[in-house]
Image (tube, rainbow, N blue to C red):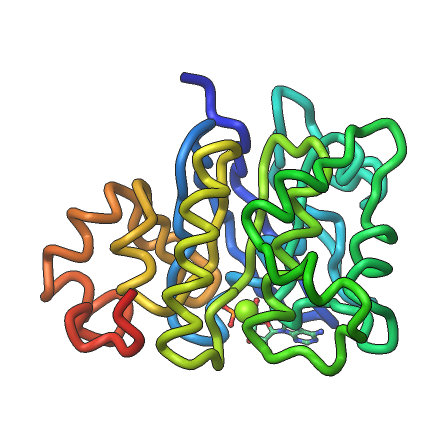
Length: 244
Ligand SMILES: Nc1ncnc2c1ncn2[C@@H]1O[C@H](COP(=O)(O)OP(=O)(O)O)[C@@H](O)[C@H]1O
Ligand SMILES: [Mg+2]
């Protein structure tokens, strides 16, 4: 099957520093591809490059990003998003002073169907709390808003950056459950440090280190190889907290 996303030889500079050095990987058209690696290796920079969302002073200096058969390298973010990529950023990007319903309404993309039934089926709380200001939600509930927004529109790929970071173990399990259900409908590129979540969800794994891809292959095989997982990720997978 043709991958939904192909990144080749991607190099990125931010404020004069080279952050990514020829990163290449594919995201399968079904299931979950995990983007892994220690803090600061370039995971967020990689996904922000895909979305055309590099910070000021950041630019793609080489390589190609092909989404759904189309070259989107250096394309404007709104065009990339309208092409069908949903994004739940690392900081969740929820509007604290708006209600849950307003956060979802703002995410409605013109020209797309708006799947409120699906979102409310996956996240009943987003319906019961629809009049609540998002800033008063728990971290896990805010993450549900961020993921819910990506499922509202017709997307062909969803990118979620560290959705379980800082969440209590029980909430980590809830987030993993909804991501699992989401992945039944649309392929996911998941940046995740919680290896129990990776084990539960991911089919493929891409590991970054210092702006280079240092491993690609099956996620389950990687996690089953304790020595390799420890060498690449710096933590034995069975010791990961928040077992999902
Ligand atoms: N806005 C920025 N300005 C300068 N350096 C940045 C900026 N954003 C990220 N970096 C640097 O790029 C590297 C990769 O960061 P990032 O992609 O956020 O890593 P990860 O998501 O894997 O933790 C880090 O060394 C970080 O300091
Ligand atoms: Mg990051």
